[in-house]
Image (cartoon, rainbow, N blue to C red):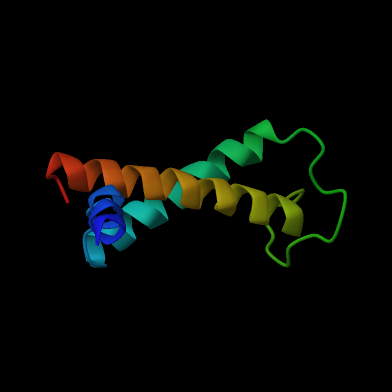
Length: 87
C-alpha cells in the first residue's frame, strides 16, 4: 500500500493530447531541424533524403538525430508549459 501511494506521488501530471500540444511538438521539431541543419558539420555522408531544396546535404541519420532532439525538446516544453498553466 505504501509503495502504490509513493508511486502515485512521483508521477508528473500530464495533459491530454490536443491541438495545442501538437503545435508545440511540431514547432519544437522544426526548430531542432533548423538548428541541426546549420550545426551538423559532416552532413550527407550516407543515404540522402528524396527532398531537394534546403536539405541537399541532409541525410536520413541527420533527420533522425534532429527529430529525436526535437522530441526531447518538445516533451520538455509541453511539460513546462502545462505546469505553468499555459497549455
